[in-house]
Image 1 (cartoon, rainbow, N blue to C red):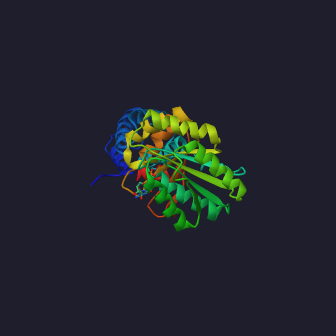
Image 2: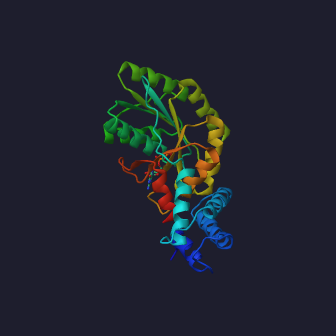
Image 3: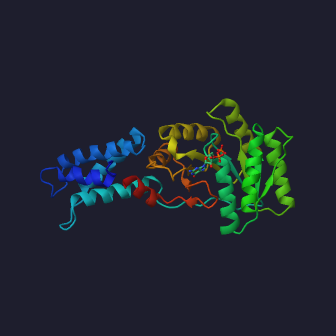
Length: 295
Ligand code: GDP
């Protein structure tokens, strides 16, 4: 059985001599174990090293209270550190505007279309705003159909132009349509490719420059581990997104990608996806994710 990070920290501390106190020597051994456990949870090695160096400093600076086990204290410090590294607080998305435009980006299969539907449903129900979904994947006819199925499921209108092969003009026309029909939020679902390529990056860049979204979200599959960080970096360099959506957290991933992405691109994670159903959307809570990485 795979021990949790908390159990591993506790065990590392218990195996030490002079376990009543956090000292330079026992903290060094424990910190190594924490680093290994973070890497096992998909945290990028450089990020794990930086986190554990900071944890070490902090642990040495703290006094162990008589009735607190050093292991528990270290777990608490690690929890606080992970929470702070992921931004500490929940992050809002900007849906002010007339209409507000949300642009979705990410690789094919990351969960963009599913999440576009979830977000539309969330805004429609929780924020009481009329939403328009826009199908901008001009390469796969099935993609338009998929978005239409999603739209029907949640009762949100879908804008599509099956004959138009230009995503810039489709998204511009959709915004015009939204204004005329009193939609307050427009969610633009774009095409994804299986890997990052120049044509795809140029296309999403062009769409972004043309429609000037109030919010650009980058959707990434949490199961892709270290690759998630590299993809996030490439997308961020090209389109400077505002926030990240981490999907498929209902799988058995520990979610270390959340920590790495935040540390590497310095953009907040705003939502998570935890299933294929339209209500499987959660506002990202750094504290909850720190708990998941630890447990
Ligand atoms: P896109 O190509 O980026 O638009 O990705 P899709 O939205 O088509 O999603 C790809 C696959 O992942 C589909 O089978 C979805 O049902 C599935 N999917 C999307 N989000 C989640 C999630 O949060 N959890 C799980 N388990 N599956 C998801």
